Length: 459
Ligand code: G3H
Image 1: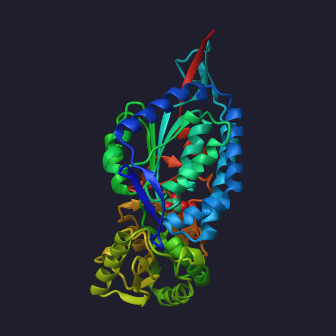
Image 2: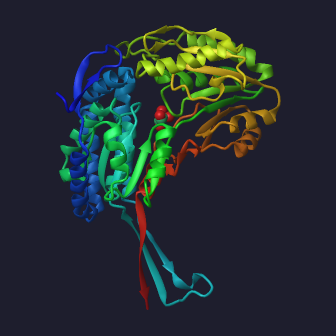
Image 3: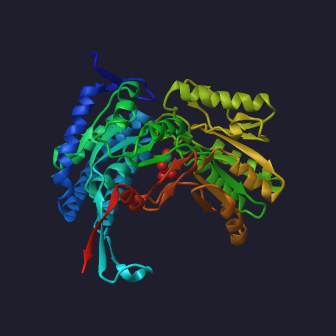
């Protein structure tokens, strides 16, 4: 059909579904429906909204295998991780429902500031913004969508949900599960189509009151420039370093680095994307990482492999170019550099330097550069030279040293002795510099989707 897009499985390249390619007019109608539904949803008691979210979570748990299978086919994630994503999402939704019930506002007395008045008393409530536009990426098509939709709904907003095309079938199933609850159906609107046709239309539509987006830095920057006078929360790219000091437990560091860098083939914004290793331990660390990388399972999502084909061929070409560039400039290939179509084998490069693209660019694939470092200050300066500032890991036994370095890193979060990761989902999740704008995590997301409204008693 002309107005449909076929959806292919990542590993088998078989058609297993289709998506409507909506026109601007159709999308406009959906936004208006959401807008019209928001008023009564916004005045529905919070406990009722919470009950609906709990029902949604239950539906997802019931459908975990069905939705997991679609995620697995659609974005090439192994089945076990795909099912885990659905269960994690149900937990996230439940916590969001409970957290929404704990938004109580404030009571401010007027005489607390000089020049104020003891006759005044302000009741501060959080009210919904209106219609939230939630745009989610391919890599966590259920979890990252729900992490926007659930806080928007619990705080009384209506939602227009636009998933990435690859990942949209999983997103659609998740919305079908939501529509099996008592949610008034117009409150959530699913839209799909070509970004070139409906992207700008959505982000500039006058009935969109807030945008929450996860995806590339380039698209996030374009959204923040186009959205006028509405709040925008962005979760974008990263180049998270694992900083390994000479006193680190190298077995622990290697374990976390490998899991952080290569799970889901490195297609995570929070993947470890470079290792900055103290010169004195770099060789041993590289050997330990190599052994673990060579034990990773490589294959199809159906086989539950850790490293599976990348989302498309262009993604694999991009990763291959980074590997080729580094090798042509003198990096040492420790292991990997093998490719079958868009399956890129896990690749480890040592002796990477600042002239190589892989030292700076986000591969979103299974290649990890090791950069050897002499001086403590270089850890900080090399880390901070990146345009990104999502997270960093520091491996050391010395808490004081870790804390000293952490305070100087331009990133949202620093993990000590563990891989970089977003979860648990109720922790604030922030990207500094080109990694994001605003803060997410359940509580912060709710706050970003509400505004203060004051009723002031003048006694
Ligand atoms: O891709 C970005 C996701 O927020 C990563 O989430 O760290 O929990 O895997 P995760």
